[in-house]
Length: 184
Image 1 (cartoon, helix red, strand yellow):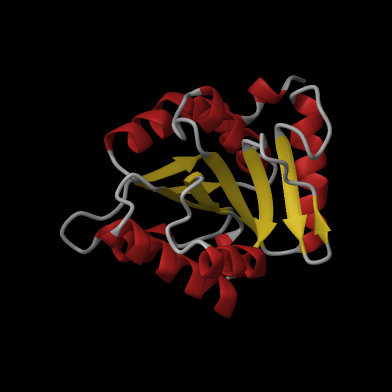
Image 2 (cartoon, rainbow, N blue to C red; image 1 turned 30 degrees about the vertical axis):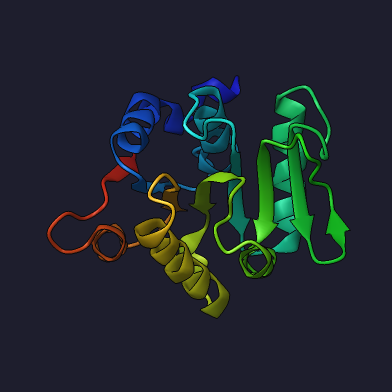
């Protein structure tokens, strides 16, 4: 089975269209559908981030490391090259890294150091059903950044079991909620 056989690839044109037309997306896809490993690659190959990075928030350090290793392998590299990760006490993100998997704590530290996240083009909140205080604060800060200084920053929220409509309304507002895509 090829990664392109995973169910999330059926949404490929819709994912790209949503983030080309707007700057927000909520994606609900079952566990094992490929959202964590495939969506960042889709966005990179589709040019959605431009010359900036795609950063994927993972709630756990082990997940950030292992998913980065898998995506790097799929792209013919090793963590620390085109694909990297940063967790507490371990940093495998290089200047040329285009896809980075990080924990919420790392993102919040980055936001302190660079409040505009100048080198980030897409910020993906993965496994958002596992919400915690850090992920909620990170999403709120990213939304405010998008509304004030970085309207070009793309935000995507992904989950297997998320109730999508409240998150879509939070991101886009009641009048124009963020687009919601569901992978069956």
